[in-house]
Amino acid sequence: MSWFARQKPWEIWDEPIQWPIGDIEAADRIRNICQSAMASAELVGGLAARAEYSRKSAEKQSKRETERYERAARAAMEIAMKISDDLMRDDAVRHIVDLCMKAGDTKTAQILYRAVQAVWIREAMQKDYPVLGQ
Image (cartoon, rainbow, N blue to C red; front, top):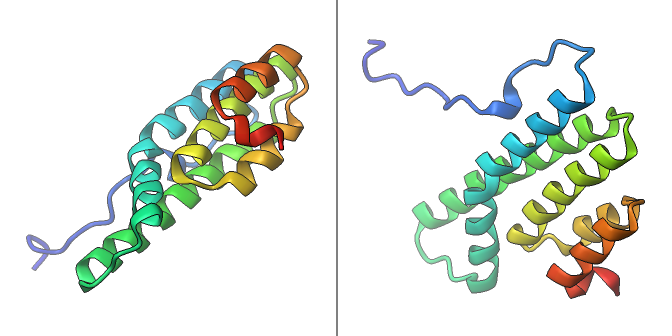
């Protein structure tokens, strides 16, 4: 019975990309991915801070949201590597850093922070997240 069969929800980062795409489309796609995954990242960050799992459903939700965040971040990073314009790439990386910081993934955020070349973007990120400069 296909009526009750649950289909896996469609995610924007699972959509195949017809390469080559331009830098503007790639940056827009990264912004959309980060916006779509922001709720999962906030849940992951909040769940990591609390870490009180007594019910299986909470553990299951935590695992699902963590996997969703990680897939989104990985897809966004893969697209960002292919952007040729330095300034657009730095702006796209800033969105990914925002996503990582919401999830509490400071290690990945620091690595991405070091990859940003534009001084004014680095300063803005440093202002928003002082942990990155350490």
